Image 1 (tube, rainbow, N blue to C red):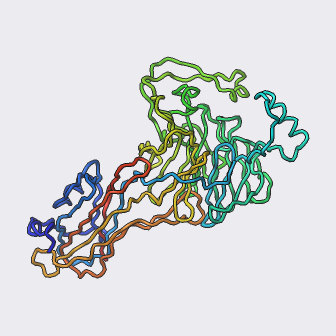
Image 2 (image 1 turned 60 degrees about the horizontal axis):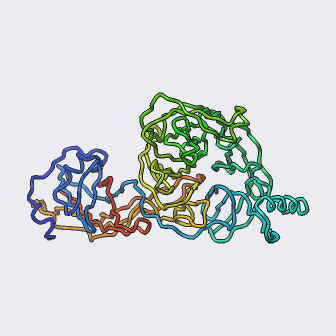
Image 3 (image 1 turned 45 degrees about the horizontal axis):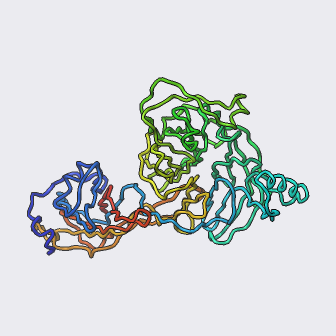
Length: 488
């Protein structure tokens, strides 16, 4: 008999005469509080169980039923806060330009979209910046084949180590995101920069030809754009876009505290401003006053390049250049994060949610001192946040390792738990959803209980060990969200 639980065996037992769907589910703060018999260094808060120190333990009550049940397994789900990232060397081809788009189509089938590397040019010594520009223009006149196209190209890899150049995929240098559906690639670009997403549909990124131009697909009155395109399980396309209406974007890294969402059944038609609630909204208090700022590319639309915004106070955090992925039931947005306090460096920010019709929750930042323009994807069994820098980020997944669990039953009906499984280390595993570039299926962290005999009374325990976060150089803890006991 375990010392930790022995003193709780003869407590008043929770009884249930009806067992809905052969499951005991613990999810809400009330359910966690009612299910707890004892915990060591654990705190229940806002529906989660938070370890308070490096090692912590939770023990449930003994739950009883009128009839015998056969416990099949117990599944565990952690909080969607995703903190186990580490910074790694660049996984993309060297020398690419502008914001990268990472598009993992299937296992062993990965694409990077970016501007092609500029050729190395040997300049005569002593040239000024202006003279170098003239020299380069003359060089390209004499060597037209070496002049970069200015648009986006594709590179393909089967292992994230060796990349093959595939040629141009867009004549625009403002490609923001890409998706995949039914053998076709949906490449979205701004026209002009930070305005009105346009679309190219390409059936073969390896043929060196730009696909079919579909024109403007979202008439965005807020400016900003820098969208994330995401195709959900039901096939619906979603665009997450910057909304510049509440901020002087020129002074805030061309980002905003406000992000909208529009959707389309086919990725082409139906994207309509205002059709869904804002997915990110970190605006401060509106003053009722208006301000202006200048955005050069907008001059092609309004003739002045001057944009108006509503002044908010105090200063606002700004986010943008979005990328989104879905893992199991949770959506994750990665983005630029420009703090309101401009003495702090720019970095990568994260938001998470499980309902696209509700505002997402801030889930933290990572790195420091760069403008990331991130692109998130799953490849070779791991998750990568690719940046327009010489380093990227890698994670094994949202699940934090360091969780062990066991379950027990009262086999003879005397009110004591007398048979236990062994302690088992549990963890989630991940696989790409077939046919989807930005959806990852989850195999739940599961404790096998099939060897336990049928019983009327059950109990479970789990213990956690903290993990060292390399980016923050601090200890982080597995935070438990939900536990489900599944019966045959």
